Length: 404
Image (cartoon, rainbow, N blue to C red; front, side, top):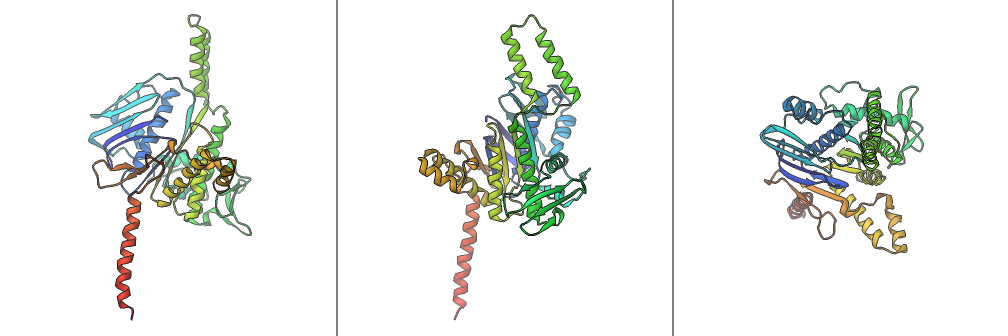
């Protein structure tokens, strides 16, 4: 993972410079820029994909920057009004370099070989609307367009799991009656319509089934669906390479390999806002584990989480510690670790990035990973807990004086 994002003066972000890894966590107070980072990352990953598939030309978004880059591209996530006069944005990967500065947008193609395309999904915090609506929503008035994209993936996932899906918590399962267009949550001795289920279930189910559905598509290695126009274009380019007698076989093979990368997904980029939404801490644990399991199903997958919950930090720490103990342990230790946390959930500390965002500093972010251990260390959320405990102790001492 070698994606880098540098942002100055954009929405709530004053200044950040972040290198992304396989698992990425952004945690902190409201309005500190967590979702803004996630949406920028999603935007540039999608733009990379659009350029790789030649859906758009290299200069499409660099011309008419206000109408295309800002309104069309950034407007998809409703961040088009976050720009200021001194906004600076740099996103760089192995394939492209994007720079927005002085109201200009520039793209540099590094001309690296494409090994496959990302399957990108942005999971919005507003997802509970999908579960609480019985019928498929066709419009999302007042909400970002990303909700419509997630809605489509949710319904495809429901069809995939219509015979049953076990939720990762509560001994609950999901069943979809496609004939009557009804969704059911089934317990050990009861069932309720999804629209009548708890808010936690309504929030969690779309995340779970969409993540597993798309993760399975990528892990299968099958060719991705392409439009007739896209397929014809790919076939023409292939024939043009094969018929060119001036190209050496080694060059042809390299060019064909580059083209073949456009026909399949090589990774699932899963961007989830507030996975803990409306969930009890034990269920949060199950949710984060599931997302990490899906992320581990393919080498190049990426997981990006935004969160307000301190439990997210503790859960990831457990998965990191499980990885470290399992990797260094003998067979007996591996067995004991696996009984607590099976290997499919483990998180390599070298693949984890975790940042705390605040409103208090000029650079309003800081890594909360310990360089020596790779484990998440003390952060602002711990400070809040300490404040609450200090208040409790002070109040209890006062209360004690009233007891006679």
